[in-house]
Length: 257
Ligand SMILES: NC(=O)c1ccc[n+]([C@@H]2O[C@H](COP(=O)([O-])OP(=O)(O)OC[C@H]3O[C@@H](n4cnc5c(N)ncnc54)[C@H](O)[C@@H]3O)[C@@H](O)[C@H]2O)c1
Image 1: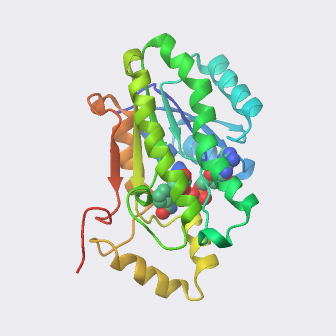
Image 2: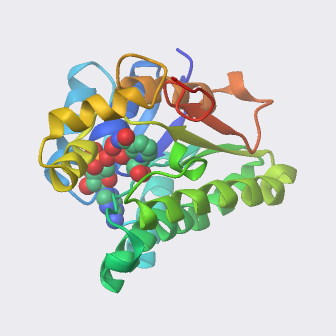
């Protein structure tokens, strides 16, 4: 039980990496707050946690809306009294070369992926400061470190999240709050399947190409990222601060040919 009794909010945990992480955290004794825009998916995550004997509640909130995020945090504090860990996971993909991106599409990606980290942090951090304790995990991506084709808006957001993580860490270290970033490579989730469908005529061929740019023979799975998040959420990582944590099958530091 590596997270016994910790209260943990995971944004976007109705699907993919957030959901896998919620299931793993609950199995390690955490009390989960499942947040998502998609109520049905969020409730399904709660049901799966409860069926496995864990504890979770669902709160629907859009991470880009201050009123909804603030009300969510108030509800968690009223219910549990504390928030030990915040995992800013919710995010959307953005596909296209820069000159073809519509301004509205650009704004949407920037809004969800950056403002969606800012707002939950803004409302959760005062509670962590009061207790002089907390762990925040921000979802970046290995795309913050390398150039990838047709991902301009998305790359801009994930680079921003990495930079934000480091600044947050400096500001909140005096309050006993750790802030780290996760940098996954390609992880097979609904998010990636959607991106493959929208970007390539032949998604199977695209998967072969994705595998070639990493050292591992397989693509990643949500559980791979969940295990890294578990380390960052737990007290085992108490000396890990402001770090980029790569979970990418060797994309960033490896070279296959
Ligand atoms: N899958 C990958 O290869 C990969 C790689 C690197 C980083 N990431 C990042 O990991 C995170 C999760 O990705 P995933 O692949 O699990 O995606 P996913 O689409 O499976 O899950 C994302 C969830 O976030 C929710 N969401 C979207 N906008 C929201 C909002 N405004 N408010 C609340 N919830 C919202 C969605 O409803 C969805 O359930 C994202 O930030 C993504 O950028 C994914």
